[in-house]
Length: 387
Image (cartoon, rainbow, N blue to C red):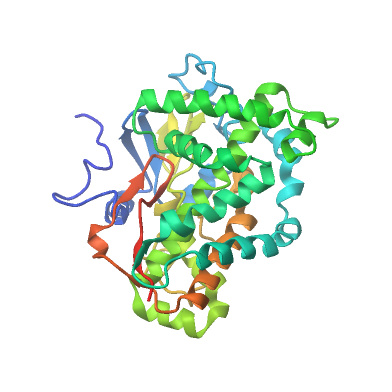
């Protein structure tokens, strides 16, 4: 019997991209670890329960470096893969320490005035009436502007940077992804050579990464610094607009904005799974034998709806305190940019609802299109009525 994809496991007529959670729940009822086939990547073990997810994410025998994969032959010559997300200690530790100081809660808090300024500017140019796509007009340009400011990306390059990064994380074809990687590599190489910028300072520092590592760092900061936040902002707004009682509650109690963001990270995770881990040696994962070289995927989305830890997990409730969700991962690779993503999403939602309290969805929720990849899940568009 062939190994199924997650789409194969969906009930007849069910759109897995639009709602993967019933499939995860059915799998979790059968056990915490399952063999699945990932189109374009091959077979992997998928973890769907919270406790086993946390254990897997802290197990030193599961490595991020693809050279531990039984199917690895070469890296294809792409330096974009030389980044801390796809490396293990001690390389990961060294690379993370180089930039960790730029993303502490204190440093990120200092960005609030600029984030608020960007949000206010984007809201000001929204139409006063009629409809608009909040992904294209708001959820996307806000984090793109923030991360491009931090990395000193020229204004004229920012649209192209997003197009290339989007192609790499949600590829439309192998050819398009390869072309995007080549174009992005060229631009990032130029960017890392500019003095007086975050990346330029890294290149000139006493513990400077080598040229491939610096390129990988630039790629990871740019892509992870906005793709995930685009999906987070649009997911918070989607959750609220499809639940009028929750939207009304938040409008009456804006202090719940941070809670709404946190509940969205649990309920509708923008980072759907981790990157692949690979077994450096044979191991047992919750009773499932994993062979050396096998790939393991941890579903953060499934783990954060585990009913053993989150009562009534399919209910979105901004008064919930979802302690222990895995929206930003866990362990050594816990998202470095979590404080920035939380701040951007909170500012974006709070200011938009303050200025446009009559916001309403302009389409049937069933008509919305979700963009998915192994790693990410997010709305392609979010059409709303503005007044």
